[in-house]
Amino acid sequence: MTTTLPEHATDGGATTAGAGPAQGVDEFAERVLTAALGCIDIMSIYLGDRLGWYRSLAAEGPCTPEELAGRTGTSARYAREWLEQQAVTGILVAEGAQDARRYRLPDAAAEVLTDATSLAYMGPMPRLFAATAGALPELLEAYRTGGGVSWERLGADAREAQADLNRPWFGELPRAFAEIADLESVLSRPGARVADVGTGAGWSAIELGKAYPGLQVDGFDIDEPSIELARRNAEEAGVSDRVRFHNADGDGLANHGPFDAAFAFECIHDMARPMDVLAAMRLAVRDGGPVIIMDEAVGETPAPAGDTVERLMYGYSLLCCLPDGLSHQPSVGTGTVMRPGVLRDYARAAGFADLEILPIEDFGFFRFYSLIS
Image (cartoon, rainbow, N blue to C red; front, top):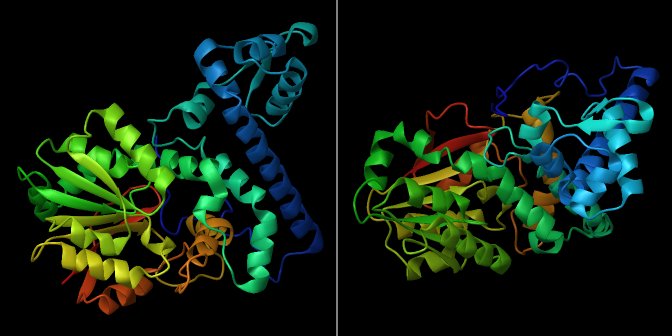
């Protein structure tokens, strides 16, 4: 299973949910009610994820509220209310008589909510939105003043949710890169060195290290908790001898290069000064070395009624990515919705001649660019 959607899908109303001029009062009120129900689902999924209730149901099977509470060391009364709500909303299945009802997590829901290796894994997504909800007072102030709210301020829920959501897709990077002959030849060269800029929890660097035994990967990030997490992840994955992490911004690349290739996975749009980082990547690679950017697969131009991808990306941008980008000044304030033309302008300002979109299809919500010197 994958969470891939076509770039401009018309998926059962996802592109027509906007309040167009022909939409009446009742229809728009229904939209707001539906959104409220979705918000309730997100917050209830957050509870089930953080309390270990979904994992218990997936691993140990159906149970009563008392059994679930006993398994997880939580309150039986709260467990009962949550289980009933989950059944009413259609996530769990209630079985048996009312006085002895047991609750079951269907296989499909178990994969989406608990299987961290599945490309359909979305259990961490509520954690990210819950983290932004906790920062709403600061976001309001930022919107009034033009300030920002950093990833650091959003805390562990946001940091770890972002890493966990991307991890299954980073596991697919070797498959994707195998389709690009020039890139594959660099990565498979014994003794090759590559840079992973904005590495976060390190999963992209780790997966490249695991797939290419002769490769050395240096990951860079400016968030110290992410660097510490990445080092632990590399140690547990058994690649810490070849996959190393550094607390440094783009300028720090020069102290560790030169590299045979440089990558930036879903992070350029977050950066306050992306042109500086891209310029540092260009200078850090040996002549002709690939510089690869993975970012959101948004359209070339805005659409009056965006598809599911664009609606989700603007949600991330409003609550997380744009406030983070503006928390470091001076900032270009890109936001999540970085269209190809914007990245092309950044690349040219950084000294590149142009960019090309790589022919890597069906890779979640992402698109790959190669920057041309």
